[in-house]
Image 1 (cartoon, one colour):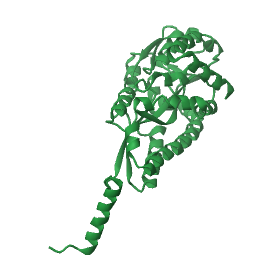
Image 2 (cartoon, rainbow, N blue to C red):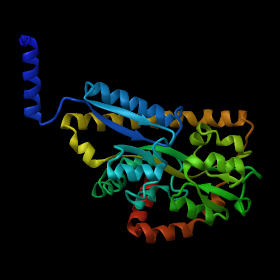
Image 3 (cartoon, one colour):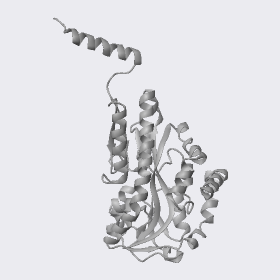
Image 4 (cartoon, helix red, strand yellow):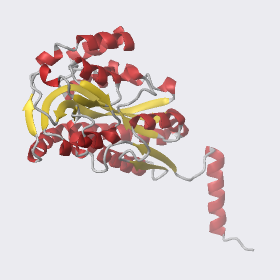
Length: 327
């Protein structure tokens, strides 16, 4: 049997490449999972990330995105990234990495995206990101979940007494649960994917959502009142299985982390620009919207800081509060 000369040369080249690099020429695929809907800003960000990675690596690294909780809610996704069955995840439930990362979500800590980003991009952010590698993860970014407000189906929330007795959905994040309880409501920790039906069926009276999630997931269909409080900022932490990242070539790894950084920058601008539009759309949907004087609420959360100073470490809480105050 005769072998075409060009076929022979191509085969030798491929074999030589494998011998030198120790890696096959087949593309590496990164599986990325999140709980937000397919038409959400988070999904748009990941589509951008996918395009950037695949272009800059010439297709040697592919990205497959699983939206809308297809591979599980935030907690299970985080655990699966840890065991390597998923390569990357996004979400606020990061106990599998380190619960102390939620220190940036202490109540009334920030009053603007700019201050949040200044802290995350500074020494405190580096300290928080460094919590991940010992657990087998790497933080490659933090996409704003955003500032959270109060919604419910009973009445506007204007003062702390209006919270009394309301069954309020919170994410299964201890600082959120403790804060809502301290403010006088009855927190119910419900996974993201179950919130719509819980609101619709009356399992809970309300929630404390980030506005984009609230709109994208159509939770407004089961609510009447939106009380703008910005009582807490939360992150969609963007984390990866560290061993998976380390298995990439240095050039590929840099392409992935550079694309994540660029995507984070794009997202920060996009979410800030979108807030006014989201509020207008929610009003069009029939929600009654009121601004909240947060001072009486903020005056109540001292016990939350005491609790989490013990849990997260007093020095860490102080460094975050000091950095937020200076931002």
